[in-house]
Length: 332
Picture (cartoon, rainbow, N blue to C red):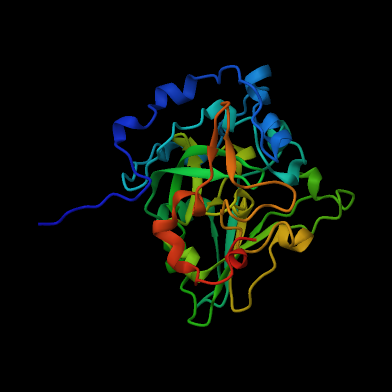
């Protein structure tokens, strides 16, 4: 007899928040501030609950992929916490291409998401460029409930829509010598003011990477939508990475290129400050950020402070990717 064992984070479907609730709910007043080293960051994360949202910019009305949604939920990926309300997610975003504050949703509406082409190059059988809608048509699309943990010590829970990154790797047909998947976002300073030369001298375009083993792990996911609809522009439309066992800055937005390479790429934040934002960026409560603790996290939109779990609670699925040794090696 086959006995199906649920992953460690899984709960019953009845415990997931219904769409009608998380699409209409407004976060209630936050309670007293929690005492964490990143307390100022946690306070900003809950500013929404005190003052209400800015204008809400949802999924682009002219996104031609809208007719594909919603996707069927993959029941293997569920949550132990309530899904974060969509209006909070739509108004609280890190997207440095459009500014360094969390309130970039309005500026991000300048992003042109069609036409949008994706390059698959490097160590592959044949380099190619494919438009995003053709790529979606070639993939098996699904919804997954994932945790999201920011390096700033706050967290949220999302219903992502999209496809496994492993499916894209298979589609690209990498050569045996390829050891990493390098991902790159768009470059358009006229559209994205954060990419201008005067903006802190950041090394644009945004670059991130995973090992081939990480990229083909079941958890690695390319998100094309959220909350049963296409991604809003401020959340990384039309393609972004979701790697829930890693800090959020690894989840590169608005991807235009996947390159298969032999040498380990230097990622965006690693190039800026490798001491604080390393290549691996795996969630670990035992390895503090140089400026604050990672032992706990503020649940976005609430006054709840909870202990952080190693690998963000996904250790059963990914711990084998990282050999034993100095704990810091794979976490910063």
